Length: 463
Image (tube, rainbow, N blue to C red; front, top):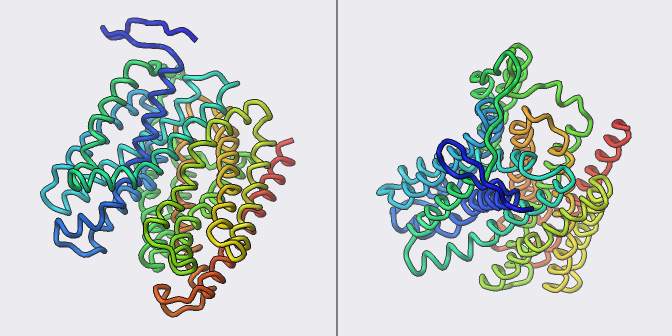
């Protein structure tokens, strides 16, 4: 693939698919880095602003809430006004908010800036995946999705280690300021390499569903708060969700076309994505407690073992995408889910028998299976989406993953605590923690079995 240059608006545009894919990879890396790099800075932020842990937690929650609640709307807006144009706007928002985070004089200004940064990240995540169809051939979609999965994993893995080094050397502000030059690089690269937006050929231009957007944001915010703070918010989520569905049935240009969910392949992919994300979150929530209380490891050892999953994800993403292009989405998706089910069973059994070695061995089975599923599922959803719906469908795919992560943090953590039967997890015995781990990942294996069943039923209905 040789690069060619064309004049556009008085400047030179690099039209190489490789450069375009590189820009999308950097965009996904930045959005993932923004998610993970702030966590390690919470103790420093609590000390710097003389604030409680509950207050500084909002530095993380504001970012995640903004992404979760706005990612579908960002994708739909990109479909309407142009995905390249909106992506560049999202990068600008992300970069400017990163600068404001690094200069924030108060905690609440920092939290507000993190919310704006999350808005930029929502745009970047939704449109980064949606633009794959405009940059690579259909035959290479799997490889492109695998690369984006790799960059997401690298961003997640790099955040804690890079954040720790920056804080120890330059202070907490550096974890936000470091993203400013990276954002500028992404802006230049995307601006010079992504293809121009095509103007719609239809006689009527779609309008943006403001009421639907507001109701969806309210629904998702209430659900996220129910999972992270108080279950009473779940009632508000159900009521707002009902109003959202009613609104989508009445407007001429809805945010989400409910008829799309009649497609068994799309509906199954979204549900499977949610279940798989729920399971993967269990490794991040349950794992540290087991390694600490069950195996009596120190913080350094726990951090090292917890990095195994993201590192394996980074290494297996691109090969998984290439396998999708070679064997097809159905075969690779099923292979990934079966491997995940085996990995969950291994996590429920091997650590009790072999300790750390058993735990790491189970992760070595589970994590590549996750990347196989992700590459296949993302390709299934995005490969044949009409050009005018790529943004909103990409947003729905990312939303199902985020909802799975939120649900997994609450539900799998609750199962672990209940099965442990310990009044306080901080003082739980190794035997109690081991039993909780076994119960949580037995349930995780059942959830993956459910995903396999859903996929099989959808495949039959589609044929």
